[in-house]
Length: 111
Image 1: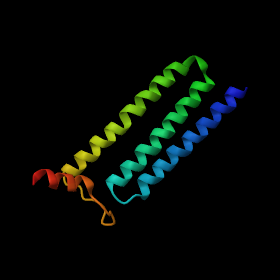
Image 2: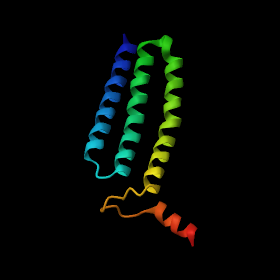
Image 3: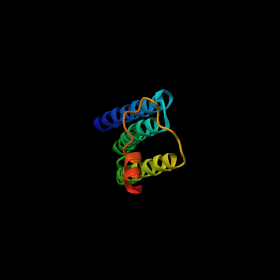
């Protein structure tokens, strides 16, 4: 009974974070901000939801932990690759962006 309640709490927390990530996709001004919002919130939301399922169904807990580790390692790496590809293909930063560290790095490297 207590495991079910804790699992449900994790499922609700995961749902909230996934909802906030989808809201961030709609509200953020450029691809880089959208990517950051979706990567962080979706990673936390998905991991919370999967942990909730693992707590509710203890027989699946090991599989759920392995899936969580897979998401934890692959989501940031894929977001980095997408962001770098977008930058190199010429997708502009939002006009309100205050710094471009990757652009500065590329300029320093070319000099």
